[in-house]
Image: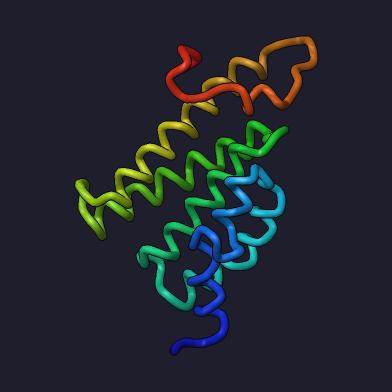
Length: 143
C-alpha cells in the first residue's frame, strides 16, 4: 500500500467514498473546491501528472469551479483553461477513443458553453440571479 495521502486520494474520486463526487452530485461546489484544492496537488505529486486519478480529481475541481452558483467570469475561464490542458494530456496519454478523454471533452464543452453564457450575461446592466446556471444545460440553445 502507498502512503496515507495516496489512500485518501484514491477514496476521493469514488462515488460513495465520501469524497468529491458526492459533493459535486449534491451541488456542494464550494466544499468540493476546498477539498480538491488540498488533494489535487497531493495526487499529482504522489501519482504523477498524467495518472488517471490525478486527472480525474483535477477535472472535478474544474467542474466545481465553473458550476458553482456565483462563479465569476475568471473562475469559468480558469476552468476552461484547465479542461483544455487536461483534455490534451488525456488524449496524449490515453488516446482519443478512451472513455476518460471523452469525459474530459464533454466537460470542456460544458465549460465553454458556460463561458459563452457568462460572457453574454457580463454585458447586462441589471443584476442577474446567479442561480441561472442551475437551470441551464448544454444544448438548450444558449450556446
